[in-house]
Image 1: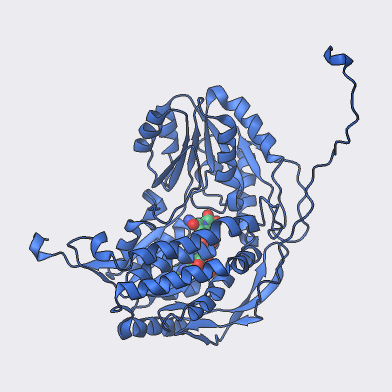
Image 2 (image 1 turned 180 degrees about the horizontal axis):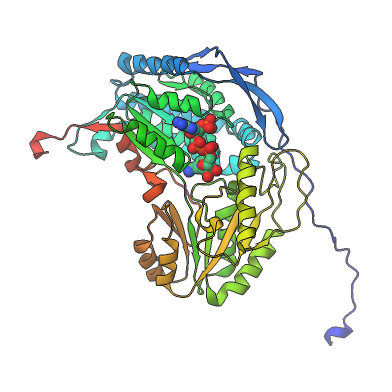
Amino acid sequence: MAELDKPQREIDVPSDWTYASAPESRDIVQIRERYGLFVGGEWLEPAETYETIAPRDEEPLAAVGQASPADVGRAVAAARTAYADGWSSLPGSERAKYLFRIARILQERSREFAVLESLNGGKPIKESRDVDLPLAAAHFFYYAGWADKLEYAFPNRRPRPIGVAGQIIPWNFPLLMLAWKIAPALACGNTVVLKPAETTPLTALLFADVLRQAELPPGVVNIVTGDGRTGAALVENEDVDKIAFTGSTEVGKEIQRRLAGTGKKLTLELGGKAANIVFDDAALDQAVEGIVNGIYFNQGHVCCAGSRLFVQESIYEPLVAKLERRLTTLRVGDPLDKNTDVGAINSAAQLEKIRELVASGEEEGAEIYQPPCVLPEKGYWFVPTVFTNVAQSYRIAQEEIFGPVLSVLTFRTPEEAVEKANNTPYGLSAGVWTEKGSRILWMAQRLRAGVVWANTYNRFDPSSPFGGYKESGFGREGGRHGLEPYLDFEESEAFGG
Ligand code: NDP
């Protein structure tokens, strides 16, 4: 029977494929009206507080302490006492028990933490639930495993803890950055004073509850909230032995200047402007998913975001067409909705910065594409954006935007791709998309980036070191490398060290 002769059946095909909303209940988490500073295992009443809000609708969530230099001093003193009173001399196997306990409690309470993370930070619940929380727990599990094996991690070097670590973290992965910092520090026998970012203090304050539940000795971890002044007070405190900082290159440089000559240890994990490079033999649909994940994951608030896309000239048009089509399917909206792909921008200040850089891109001559998108009226939002016709000199190709904004550039040969990719003051990460294994290795050897992903993007694992070249900072977090900045070494005489 010819195709046309077949009886046409009437099928009721829905024409509207919009998703029904699927909000995660926020009842699972109890937010207190007011939080103090977590010092020596107790809540210390701060002299001053500020309000932390939900970026999705600017709802006030809680009053949070603004720690003064004197408060920071109390926290450092509590950490010093805990260090001297037993934590540093506890056998590694005993420290490991606490870390395992913390990891398990995080797993048990993961839904509560995921809801709070999305509420206070604006990231989609499916990301906090499926990425931030599992990875945070995995870091504690991983470093629990190292706590009694430090002698094997660094044979003949006699590792010993360094003392009190001051840790300053940003707002893009609040709980995950906390885990990256606290887990290796405790595994190595140090005590900690942690300062969360001003806009996202709530999961760190809930974490204090986990520490109590795990019966961690008081003072081993202290949490002081506040703005940049609190961070600066921690950097300047004379009794801190090491500073670990993740944040902007500008503040990182300032901290490095302040610590010069003090003998304090320092690790800096700073900004990035990563190149995501697609060759003409790559699986294009797969690459498009990787590009989307690379730049729109966590609204682009990611230091290793693939914010510069380099496309081989021969596939430029089909790739950009596929990418723009894919953008029309991204769901931007309520971070607590389980269908949301792109949530709220973290703060009014960050939204302003994104707007300013996007305006500069248009002024300099780049072509902007934004899919049709209805944004909520309240809160901080930005439509996923692609810029084509971008020159290397434009600000959008040079500066870290830290938002859902992609700049597309082209190249002809692998050599040109490497040269353009490395033409940045940063060097945190890169992506390469090609079917050829030998080309992946050739590229990875030449890209000046701490992490190079091949045919994937934004993959994290606690066993894998992460960190930058050039203005992206120094020191590594994760893996065995992540232990080193939290240890001093006494080289063994027997081996001539
Ligand atoms: P900051 O570098 O200011 O913040 C990072 C952390 O440092 C926060 O806890 C912050 O406190 C604290 N801090 C601020 N000033 C000082 C200081 N003088 N001494 C010690 N600690 C300080 O980043 P922003 O939040 O201002 O973001 C600005 C830009 O930085 C972003 O647009 C983005 O480009 C980049 N960034 C990069 C990150 C990364 O992971 N590489 C993470 C965050 C931002 P507070 O929050 O109270 O200001």
